[in-house]
Image 1 (cartoon, rainbow over the protein chains, first blue to last red):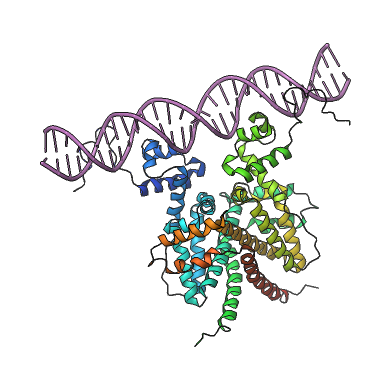
Image 2: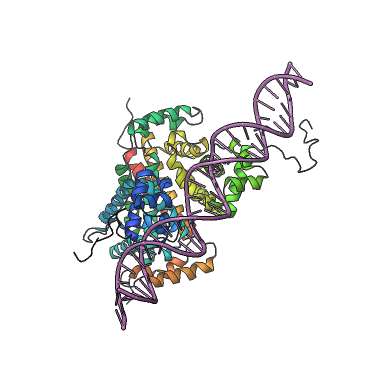
Length: 238
Length: 238
DNA sequence: GACAACTTCTCTACAATGTAGACTTTACAT
DNA sequence: ATGTAAAGTCTACATTGTAGAGAAGTTGTC
């Protein structure tokens, strides 16, 4: 072993030096496990058995740490083989993203919120890679580059929106879910909220994947139509 | 005047008693003006010329205060005359909501994030009213109640997503916008991000309203198709 | 080895925050 | 006046992010 953990393991077991990756992934674990609020410098330091201050070598401040966490999560989104039909690919990416969000529900607020403070041009590469990927995909599919951008926005907008929606209805304990729901609906004035109250049962069983897929179908239908429409008129100039 | 502000205006001008509305609207003003982080109990107290502790009579804690602010914003969303065609209405609501979000960009994180901590059934009525309204609208338009729910989700999902997207690209100073963008794009490795870099100009001029409308068109097209498809099969049983 | 430069981590300290608990002031009903 | 409830204040404390100075450990050069 060329790299020794050598001598200094005598008292507090001298630990291997930190790294940005280690710091960020422990931070992520903390958030996943105990929630966003649990991610404090002190707690993270404790988790890593280091003085909280040592963290500042790997993230300029707490905000940067949060950005780092979102980046880590974003990087978990695998980039995929390009073979398939573009519609199939968009579907797949959407579902992958949904699963990713479900695996880190506590991070979602960061995912949707942090980019608000960072102009697009300055975001970490990991965050921009999906964008580039989808642009490529759409342009290959026949969309004009500018249109591809619009389509991307519609698509990602819808995707983010769906995830938000789903996680809002998502409750950890599904038994509790129904209980709370019934309780809550009961509270609503019957005259003002007739439809909502009537939908109690329908609200109780929510199938996120199906819901997403349904939305995607609508979206893709519309997109395909648009593509077909724009494909014919502009003949390439000789 | 039966209610006197009478005697006690002699030294620090005895102030009229607070009220939840006053507290919340000042809180909103603070957030609008100075950003989310500026909304601290102490600062809000100072703004109202009261001891920070007095606020706890109108909001159980800071989190509740935040919820209150989102509620206030939500209540600004006017409910509209019902005459119009459902598609027109959905379009109108979407644009209204967009404008609302643009008027309170600093509140958006709350708008999308706070509901995550409150199960649907327990949200403030103001937040649920749009939901009920749209359900009614869709059911009137011919959707089965359960379908109306799905449609609502797609619609609101898309809407939220669009707003998030738009505000992410929104920068206060439009001059700076282009500068930052150019700067940022330049930084991207040309091999890895060819399309994104090429889209520089297209990225620079963003028309949110148009973008939203385009998305809505796609969505509504898909929805209308779905409505037509589901309208014929299930004949009412005699 | 001796020494220096550098990286990594720790200690101490401070200002700001949310909020519990006890108290004071004000308003009003009897 | 006297009691009761509401509204507002004071004091105090634990917890947070982070600045600044330095300690400990690592590595390179002679």
